[in-house]
Length: 338
Image 1: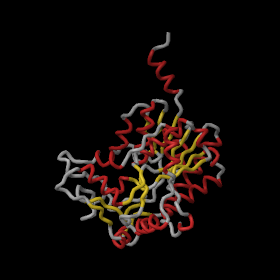
Image 2 (image 1 turned 180 degrees about the horizontal axis):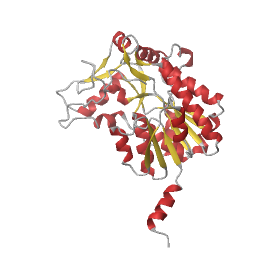
Image 3 (image 1 turned 45 degrees about the horizontal axis):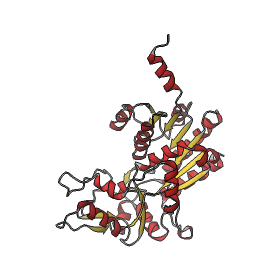
Image 4 (image 1 turned 90 degrees about the vertical axis):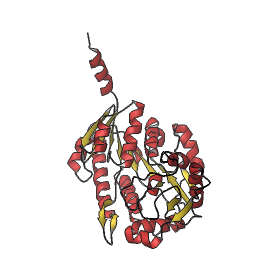
């Protein structure tokens, strides 16, 4: 007679393995936790340090195995990808802040991306890997006004081209998110998200496409539910398309106090470029070319994939303090990217 625990273990073993790179990053955490909810997969959460608070949090989730892996260490990726039927790949240009450079280093991200794709290729040739999802960044709404694009955009787009050169596009889905809501959280004096201030990097009347970082996980979960329909595709994804003034009005609605006057405040472009030059270039790019997510098309795809996007209003409500006046901020970075 087979013990009940053995039956459970056997069932667990039959679940497809999904490997998630940079699992303790904002995107990675969202992907792992969203996939965990489905109870359909065995999730291999890859991180450089398995002892961090985020890594230990992931290790407590059902069907999640936290393993050591570094995008700059090919051997560790090769081991982490062994037997995976799908891989979620994510890279970062952030490499510690330096004066006159900021924290964004394009070549650093390119090296990660090429290492990643090389190991995805090896995993695919072994015959087990069926699907690769890569997190890139949205292409422009107006391609004719694309240049100059920020370096941390072109690095991801160059990785996309490498996916094609390695003949992996046929088994890949490329998700291209826009700016994150989380980018509004910063600690710049006078420009921090609060009941009075909604900070931004572009003029108040420009349309700005944004998304909650946790929604990347929803998209990955949805794509994995219908892989054959979304392979060989790239999707610009967004949750909202609002002007700065409309964002401030959303915050005002959430605060709902006649005594508090909420306004949109644009961080001076020169200050941005001094702190993070590439973010300043990104601000120029958003005003000139704009993110290119087709909001009407996305609504149909979201219905197909059972995705309920997080609205800016809902995201803001989650950050309202107990006294209903103060917005909590948690970012350690002066200026966020993407």
